[in-house]
Image: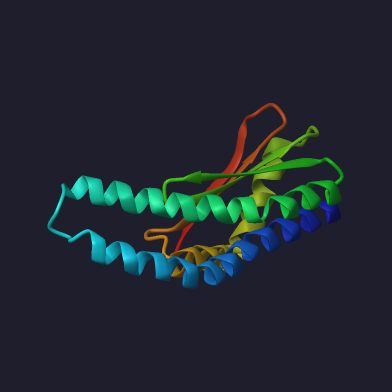
Length: 161
């Protein structure tokens, strides 16, 4: 149980580091956005194309954040002793954290414990989504998914700004 709490604390720190990166990247993104806004008037082109462009811009920013933190993810996995694998995916305007146990766990007990501990961390996860939104990712959210060793979904939640 003690190890489980340590794992959750480390994972929460990873989420919070994304919020910090988001606010750091905002200034660089604003300069690029200002140039883009002047070059394409809102009335030109179909609305769908503008939405696609905004989404792809958000994806580029999110992918850059993921790459920036790749080393931290690797270090965290090593600190966890190989008991859990961490993946981060960009899904539209969301960052999805996928945690997979590499050892056998009691699925019902793990799901209950995850629900309790993630609920305690909800404010921090919402703050991470707010950091992404502040960095220019409209409609940003953070998705948390935990999987058992066999691939069964144990827990999932989404947190918005």
